[in-house]
Image (cartoon, rainbow, N blue to C red; front, side):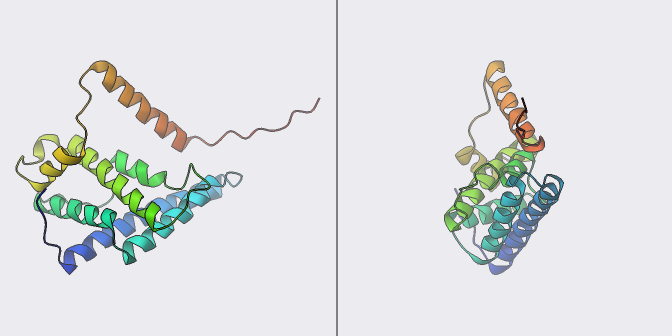
Length: 183
């Protein structure tokens, strides 16, 4: 992968974009926490996302470096990242801290989140832009290096699609609350 010279302005633009985008996901989780007060997962996720926003604004790490590279690669082809690159990266962020109450919310977990968003963003960009990504661009090179090949058979494609549907349903449906049955 080619190395992009990182200047302060690029770093600031990426951090501003990512902090704003993660903050919007946190706000969505806060709204869901207000809607489903008996389910603590939304509040947990909102808290984790807000802590990730602070991490993005103040820290460095492999995830930050990858996101800067992604941001620069998008700028190279004149593709402006306004929000998440697509549904996969949005889902990765939106599920942060949601499924695991005991997930340690620390620099390591924030770094892992950013690395997962990086790969999901590359998949989103590959799927959304397809033929509009120049083969010699940094973005195309990143996709080749970090994103697995698309499913080759219809069965594999069906499995991928069903997995995505399952994940969307998990995110959108409230958790079932068991109530005791009186005899």
